[in-house]
Amino acid sequence: MAHETLTGAQAIVRSLELLGVTDIFGLPGGAILPTYDPLMDSTKIRHILVRHEQGAGHAAEGYASASGKLGVCIATSGPGATNLVTAIADAHMDSVPLLAITGQVNSTSIGTDAFQEADIVGITMPITKHSFLVTDASEIPATIAAAYELATTGRPGPVLVDVAKDAQNKKFEFSW
Image 1 (cartoon, one colour):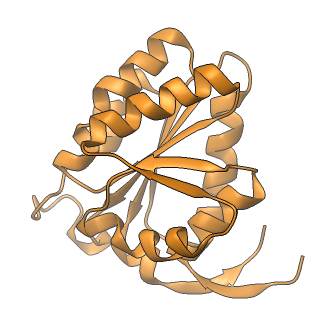
Image 2 (image 1 turned 135 degrees about the vertical axis):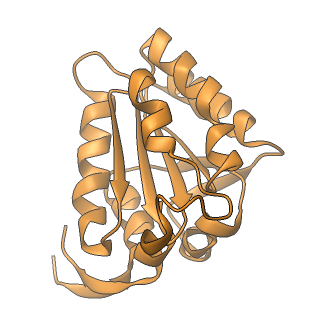
Image 3 (image 1 turned 135 degrees about the horizontal axis):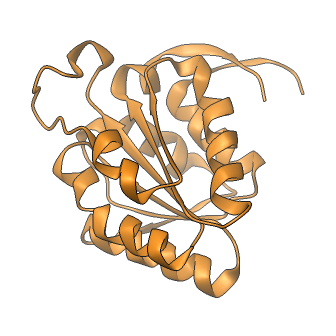
C-alpha cells in the first residue's frame, strides 16, 4: 500500500475501514470533531448518531453481540468520554468486543485540569482489556490495529483509544 499524507483524524477512519468496520455509534463534541469530517466523508463506514454517549456505548455493545463483529463507539473528551463508562463496564462483564474511541484535549493540556479534560484512560483501566492514550498522530494506525486485535481475540472485551485533539489534526505519512 502506497504511503500517503493524512491527518490523525483521517488515519483513525482509514484504519477502521481497513479493519472492516462498517458501523460506528457516536455523538460529536469538541475534542472529537476533527475525526467527524473524515468519518462523514467515508463511503465504507456508517455513523449512527445517538442522543447520549451512553447510548452509543450500549448500541455498539448490542451491535457486537448481535452481529459477532466489533462494536465501535465514539465520544468527545471529559463528560462525553465518562458517559461511555457504564457500557464499557457492561461489555467487560459480558465479554463483548467493543472499541471506544474518545477525543482528548491537546497533548500539551493533558494533566492540567483543562476544560473538558478527564483521565478516561485511568478511569477505564479496571474495566477494559487495555486503554491507550495517543498523543502522536503517527501512532494511530498501529494503536487502532492493536485495539482491534485485543478486543476481538482471546476472551473478547472492551478496549479504549483516547486520542489528543492535536494528534487528530497533525499530518503524517500514513502507513498500515
